[in-house]
Length: 359
Image 1: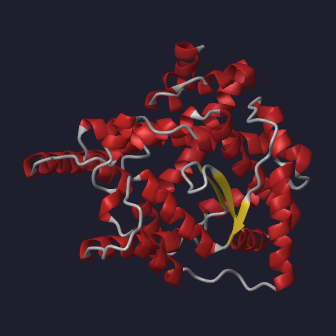
Image 2 (image 1 turned 180 degrees about the vertical axis):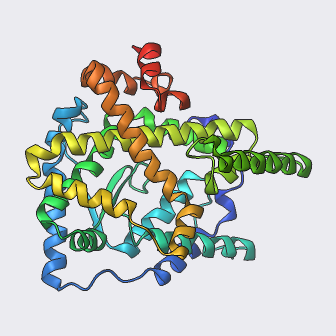
């Protein structure tokens, strides 16, 4: 990962420092639900197999994408839910410019926001299968959450080895994306720096933006449609942000959509050669994503932007599928040349616009 440029470092002003990250980790670990019941043998087998499959997935991913991150294949870290929460809090602290934990007594407000953050991470820790973290304390690293992998493969009633390889293909693609293109982490850091700086808005501006947001949501409810990111927590964020923060948020959303869509494309393209039951896994996994949730879980998903995340998978994959089908993977890889070649928000749903502009 490239170091952040000094201007990006200097603009990190408030968001990360408003959270007691140590307390967030403590609360998250206490609230985290235990994983599925499993014998010690089953847990050990899952850890060993995920470690091995994450190495084996690297070669077909590199061959399909044409992205080469060097001769060495880094080891994945196989973690449980509590370990993932600890890693996530440290990564979020780094991303948002939070202070290094020290001996100073944290503020009451910091503990409140820390408790809220920990509760959110405890909820997320129940479902996340894996994650490439470019901002980890030891540099970029791939995390695979083995209790959740075991839980989902049981729910889907699929072959464990095949499902674990399928998950590894997706997550290893993220590792390859970032390690082959080190500028991606710096680009994210600079966007996050703008997004988390002190906005300095007055009350009148915020009220005006909220009123505009409400009018837009009413129009969408009347059938005029709208951007998939215009509702829920993301839509509310956009409503109160100044223009620089909105642009930074758009950059992060588009980048996330590209990265997830590219990983989904790779999973399906490589899958038939290395995952014998890939068609069954994809069908059952997609059905699980569409399944109706209890009211409380639907509310939490909306507040946390989970549905927007699902949109990233489908919209991003459609974009990558279209471009690769039209021009091939080698020419598609122009997208990794630098920030100026990343898709614009309008181009995600109209990939021909990206082809015309970049290629």
